[in-house]
Image 1 (cartoon, one colour):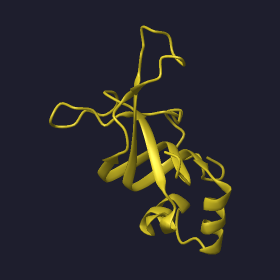
Image 2: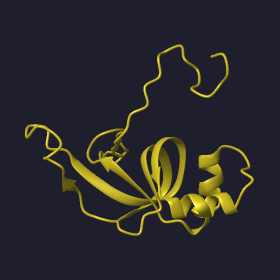
Image 3: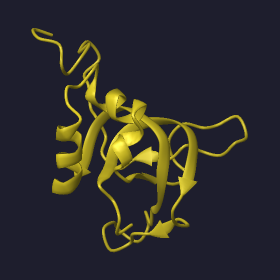
Image 4: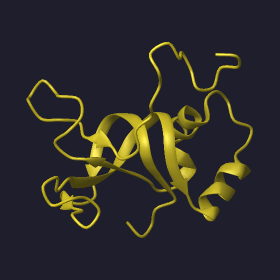
Length: 125
């Protein structure tokens, strides 16, 4: 979307997903046999963020609302991104399976953590 200020590439979400587009193929980036479909949506709430893009204008809005209280991704979502248009994209029909048989979608950027690595932000871990 042309009005984006924050675009999540890897995170968890909850609540309603407001679809921005129907799933689109991105075949130019992957081999034809993979042909993943990307779904873009506006999340209701986001957390566990590990990859995103932000515009300079959106960063300025967030700076004007400092100080941060708690994890920054939760702080932004708790305040509905301070009016910044937030979007996310997932690979459709992959990821966690819902009770109805459909899938949540797989994030575009995967966060790899070794088995015994408890946190990527905890000192000394």
